[in-house]
Length: 300
Ligand SMILES: [Zn+2]
Image 1 (cartoon, rainbow, N blue to C red):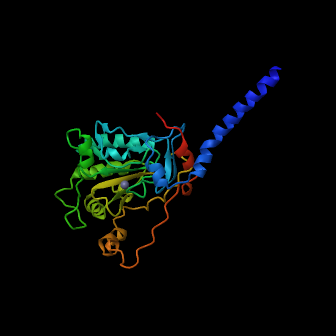
Image 2: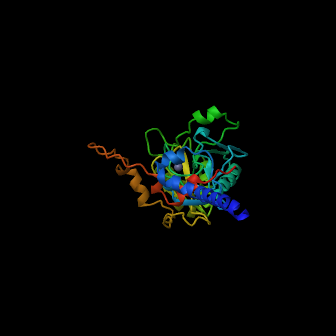
Image 3: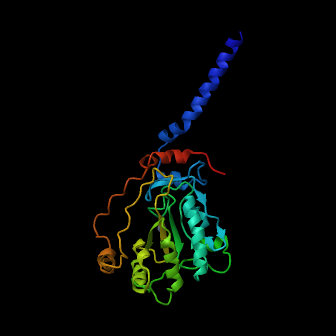
């Protein structure tokens, strides 16, 4: 009698448990969607034992992100509405450390731009990279002496370091503490690359004396004259993080830099048929583990 009574109850519990366990995977499969929509609208980080970057800087996601507090002793986060002050714990830690080093060499604190979204991934606007929590944009404008309001953090503009309509740094704007800030950043062993405008790279090539080993990590790239971009290597505990090739030996103040001062990199796109619109990147196009990251419970 007791047996007969209990059996159906047990099987109902088992059924509902197995149904619940299967649900997230089923939902993720059946509801494939554009990745920037899925990752661009999620407001909290995923709960995990082991934070990890998944995939590549421009095609991946981030499990167990932590947020950089919007105010620190030597930094302020800008553009709060974007909710992109999330990163791998190592990057968040490094930014705090960098801000105090920079403050000691005359930089009045960091204005921090985009890092990553709460679970990384592609964004609804801007950036191809910044997807795995290992990229951060730092303004080339030092922090003001006051705490900025929410509105000011939305509206305030960074300042270009270039002379108007030129590829060269404006000597009235560039200071030794700009150089010191970039040097501090490049000196961390796990900072792999720093992106700056070619004019800024040239400025460093022509002015840095003494140890120039760190200059090789500073890479010329389009844009990046209002801010520079710090990129960390894949961190321990991220088996699915796809590394990038190491930068070549040397200071990079060579022919590869000269190319940026030719017409070629700045030629407008050829007129004619516009390129076909690329297919949207779907969640299923990202590394498999990113679907798990997307459906994981939120960390408090
Ligand atoms: Zn960037």
